[in-house]
Amino acid sequence: MRFSVATWNINSVRLRFPLVKRFLQKHEPDVLCLQETKCPDDKFPRKDFEKIGYPHIAVYGQKGYHGVAIVSRHPLGGVQRENFCKKEDCRHLAATFGPDAGLKEPVTIHNFYVPAGGDEPDPVINEKFAHKLSFLEELAEHAVSRDARNGARSILVGDLNVAPLEHDVWSHKQMIRVVSHTPEEVERFEKFRESGGWIDVMRAFVPADRKLYTWWSYRALDWAESDRGRRLDHVLVSPALEKAAIEMNILKKARGWKQPSDHVPVTVAFEL
DNA sequence: ATGACCGACCATGTCGGA
Image 1 (tube, rainbow, N blue to C red):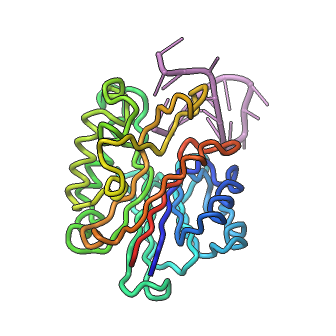
Image 2: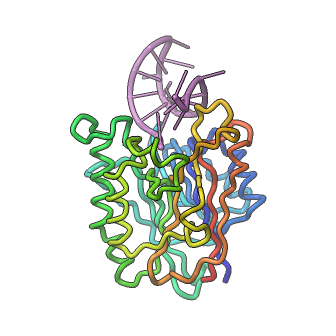
């Protein structure tokens, strides 16, 4: 069946529920993975999602910062919340979709929010950057990647906070020492990707020599005019799902909605 | 100067985002 998965760093799910509703009602993905929900689990707006046809929900949130959630039209099971770098800071959530979701073979969706890494790209003086590098290193060694390499049917999405390719940023030259595009991060991102055999689905639809962004800074006077974006949000699949993706969409215009997130939704449709 | 910002919180500044 056709099964679509969207990912969106929403930067407060409570504040921006109206935008999420607008997106879900128009595009109707089967599953939406959210990051930066900034919402404790008991405050997650479950009823609002139920009302618009997304009653199957898994959350891993906390007060104020970070937080991830998976909302679905179909039943989900096998919910996992992995912690990295010995922190319980709500950066991973997984769920498995099987026969009761209409899938013959089960698929596990992993939703990640990788640390941003602060300003200074030096792990010695900036512990946030050190945390980010450690997180990516741990991800490469983690069962999530090992299982993918060993034949699991896995989809990994989220705000990975790394723009790995030259044309994932508006200027490779001007971004080379800016956190999100430094060689240190890109190298660890690549090691992680290779460790799981993860396939970059977005780039299977848009060649690497074309600019591709999912995030535009709030600070720009006119985000669309300057168009200085980065591709921080990703959809990766394990080798078992290499040929499953049939369509990909980046909803750039969501950046122009009223009181927007600085990230836009990315949706991939699969034949599963 | 890419950037004149944005959200949560026991708020009226501070932290985190990227």
